[in-house]
Image (cartoon, rainbow, N blue to C red; front, side, top):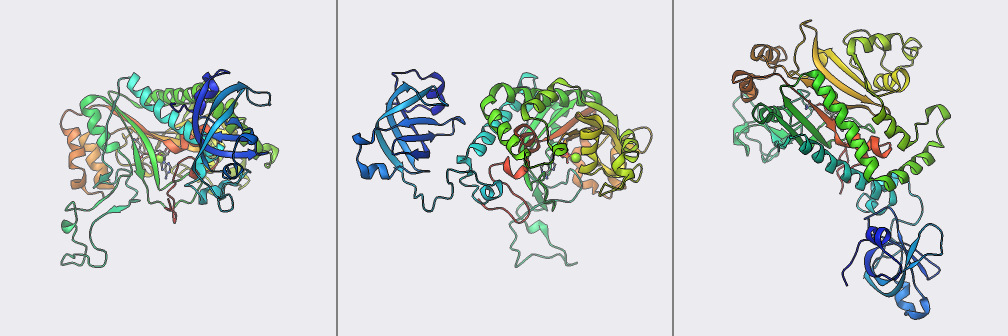
Length: 476
Ligand code: 4AD
Ligand code: MG
C-alpha cells in the first residue's frame, strides 16, 4: 500500500478507506489511542488500537516520540475534535524512542528550553506551524515576483566588498591562523589567501543586484545574509535571509508602492493558505499575552494581519518623525533610553515602535534620512543633507524593510565613496554601471525572519528560523 500523508487522510479521507500512514507518536493513551503526526499539518490523526488483537510486548514499544507505520481503515469518529479516525489493523515500529531520555514530553515546554533542543523542536506543534508558515511565505515571495516579471538573481555569498559599510563581516579565509603570511609592514598578506584577496560573507546582495537591474531591469535576490554585529536582541540574527528586489526606471515612490503591495500580498497569502497553523499560533499567543499587563497586550494575530492588509501605510519624512518624537510624552518625560536630540539622531527600536504603535497605530514608511546615518549608495537629495532612503516600520517589530533610491550620478557616488573613506578600487565594477548607461533605479531589502516573526506572532527571531545563529551560539 502507498503511504499517504496525514493531511490528506484528514482532508480527503472517507469512512471505509484503507490507508497507510507514517509518523511520530505524540501521545499514546489507555493502550488504545495513538495521536500521531507527520508534520504535514498541525492536526494529529487519532489511531485506535484494539489491544486484545496485538502482542503486549509490541504495544509497550509504542511511546511518545517513536516512529510508526500504521495500516487500517478510516472510520467516523465518536470523539471530540476530529471527524474521522483510524482503526488500526497492523502496525510497525520504524524507530523506537526511549521515553525516559526523550526530551520532548507531551506537555508544554518553554521556548528557551526548546532552543536548546533545536534538533527536535520541529516535532512540536508550535515549530511545525512556524516551519510551514515560513515555507508558505518563501513560496509566495517567488510567486509574487515571478507574476510581476522579475528575475531571480543569485548573488554571491562570498564577496570582497562591504555593501552596508558597517564593517560587520565574517571573514572567509583558508589561511592558517597560526602561521599567517605577512607583508613587509607586518600586515597580513591576503594575496596568499584562497581568493588572492580579503573576502567575507555577504551582508547584502544589493550591489550585485544593481548590476542585474542595469541589464534585465527587474530582479530580486533571496538568500542567506551574514552580519557579525554583536546584537543580542529578539530581532537580530548573525545569519538571516533577505529578499532584495532591485528595479531600473523606478524612483522612491514606486519603490514604496512595491514594498507595501508586496508585504500585503505575502500576509494575504499566509492567511489564505495557512489558516489552521495561524489559528493555532493565534491561540498560543493569546495564552502568552495573558501574562502581560492589559495595555501591553498586542492585537489578536489574525486581526492584526488583516489590519495590515486593510490600511494604507503612513508615509512621513525622517524630519517629520523627529519632530513627532521630540514632542512625544516619553521623550519629554525622559522615558526613552535614547533621548531624541534633533536632526541626525539615529532612530532606535523604541522610537520606531513609538511611531508605529502609539502615534500612527499602523505601519509607517520613513523617508529622507540624514545621509550620515545611511549607506553610501543612496541618492542624495538637493538639500545636501538627506538621502532618498525609506524604512518600513511594523508594530512589534520596528524596521522590517530598508531600502532607497540609488545614486545614479557617477560623480556624486564617487564623491560619497571618498567622503566616507571607502576604497574606490573595491567598487570599480559597481561604479561602472554609472559610467555605462546609468539610469534611475531603486530597491529594498526585506528581512525574511522579521516577516515570519510578524506573521506567526512569535516574539523571538530565534524561534522562526530552524537553526539560529547568534553571538556565542552556532550549535546544530
Ligand atoms: O536595512 P538593511 O541593512 O538594508 C540593506 O541591507 C540594503 N542593502 C537593502 C537594499 O536596499 N537592497 O537590511 C534590510 C533588512 C532590515 O530592514 C531587516 O528587516 C533585515 O534586513 N535585517 C536583519 N534581520 C535579522 N537579523 C539581522 N541582524 C538583520 N539586519 C538586517
Ligand atoms: Mg536598515
